[in-house]
Length: 379
View 1 (cartoon, rainbow, N blue to C red):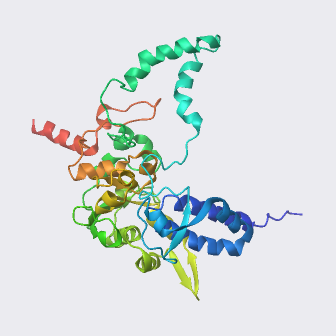
View 2: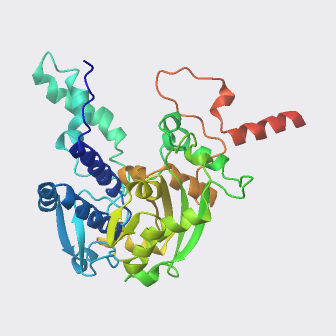
View 3: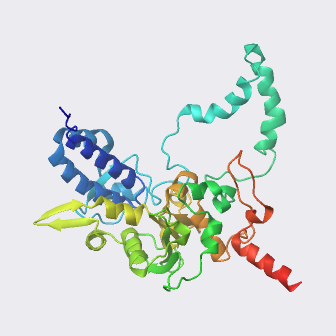
């Protein structure tokens, strides 16, 4: 007798959905977007499992007063409750964290792994040699590597973009596009669109600190991960998509609720409101937004801690920026606007260690190769 297949477990499906919501909501750009997502999620989870819903609320979440949150970072008017919103420690949106800290609390071992690896290999036979080995590393390696004698300002974000982000082959393999690809494909396609969309949006009306130049924020919307067979640099961004992404970041209160409805993230039927996860992932996980101007200058915690004055900042909503304070999108926009010191027309390819290198001209950006060939033809 043929054995029937195992019946699909509804609890397992619900767990997968909940896990996807956690991953998606973790990088929401603003706390009011995070609150909106979890307001809808808790309403759904209450129907699935009251115990699971109560556990999440009591263990990971707090319903914080809006006034209390505004003391740390920008918090607009929440969609459903004007006085408070849901907050969790795992939220790492760009308006509520330092770049490079989006990975959360790092274990103590990660800070000591470097010197432990350097010492362990040479002192296995004699543990007492660890002191001599560390003293040698202190004078010969660490002093030079960390430039202790140089006059430098410690920062929580990189001063220069990583080479892998500029033209790394590993990014293409992972379904991302390095800055060189964005720059090469920056021109308009036959449809009249290009791989980024630039928008100006007045944001001082929804913030308490109008210390930006004139209250205007410049947004650059682009794709940050592969969709189907189309890499981010090859994708085209429509005006409608850009306006929805920017609206989700810049709006609050009733205006944000309308934006959620228009984007298809919020679904309302027969008086019941629900979260459409695919739409949320498409607009806020598959797309990213580079921002400069009033919003990042006045709302980013980098300057809210002690400076109390605006400091020009270029930030991005993508996961890479949240984790490392650096991303391919910021590098591309700076090169596009002539603000960075990196020339994306001639950047060598950074390949994974162990792979054979191709011909020399394969390591040059396509735009640089075409100009090089033209010069040869003129000769």
